[in-house]
Image (cartoon, rainbow, N blue to C red; front, side):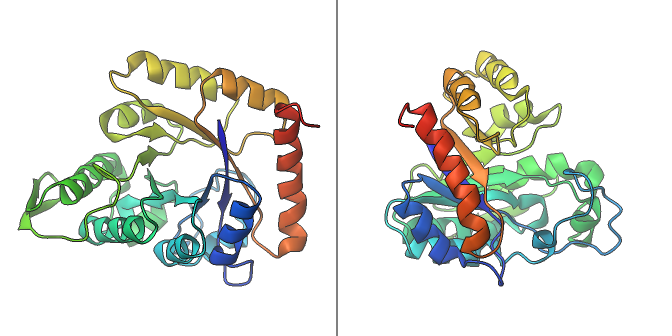
Length: 276
């Protein structure tokens, strides 16, 4: 079981490249960045975490710019999106961005994808929240076609293009792993349809649902968890569930706020390994 970090890169916090080098040096296996292009001022969609929406949601650097900085500052660390809101993105442009970072990193990119929670945000991008899950699936499948076919074509309800040439192709074959985020009632269906892994935020029932995923899967699918308590007993439960990767969010800020949280996580990992 590997361990990773999640982060909202903002302009007034430790930068993405600097943080990537820092967590690689500390022995973590991966780093993912969150994505929000903007947050509508109306705030009609409630924040899933409850209470006021943290400022970091409105202040994140562009996802792929931040990932480029992280990839170029490291040599072993896997870098990825946690998650990319593909329902708000052009699939042809996004496919090229993913492939470009995978090439620049030497095949160290993980493509976390999701449909998001802020309906006003997606509507501003022209996405109908009522059909977003069908759009989500089509855009992922269209990107897979671009990555794997020399002359890619795709014809769906929402995505349509004939015979396009797009390079570079990803360094990883057939393409970077697609990590499906989310915890809704139909998320396992989406993972089975087009995911290489399920990458949900932690909840107490997450290992039970991971068992359901594996019981239904007809091909290897990884299970990863984001944001569990920094508790060695929880890590033991996740290890027993054959979890591939466990990650934790770090606060956006300077080292004075990042290091205490990171040290708490490292103590839990050390206790889990019997080193404390």
